[in-house]
Image 1: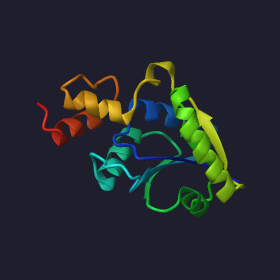
Image 2: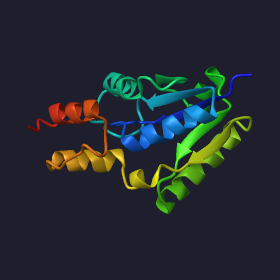
Image 3: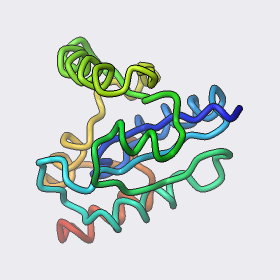
Image 4: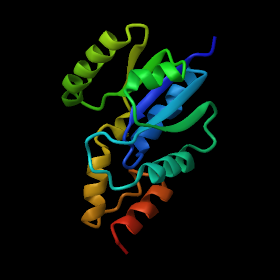
Length: 161
């Protein structure tokens, strides 16, 4: 049986912290599906298609990784993909309460799907997509936070030279 994990998020944009988790998860599972949420109640800087393209560029060469967009209930998407696990990242204690609520709801909706938490490598624990966008807006150096393709796309999107 193929062990499949879903790693959901908006990935707006995908960061080095996301990539770290995906690389490590690819060693634990036969297949890791990076599931990019179409509408999360946020106003993304990039369209769904742009986020999918950036993720595909960044994750190219990592075996067993597939990038998909989705716009349905996460557990329903996980069932469609025959996934047994939802993978979530925890950067800090502040993430825990929100993730705890999500996990409880997902477990109620689909008790057969487990949630697994991974922590990013220490050098990525402070990186979030929101902070990356803020640093970019203010003209800061993002090179240690995102892949060069994301860096370039953010510069273009935010009209930064």
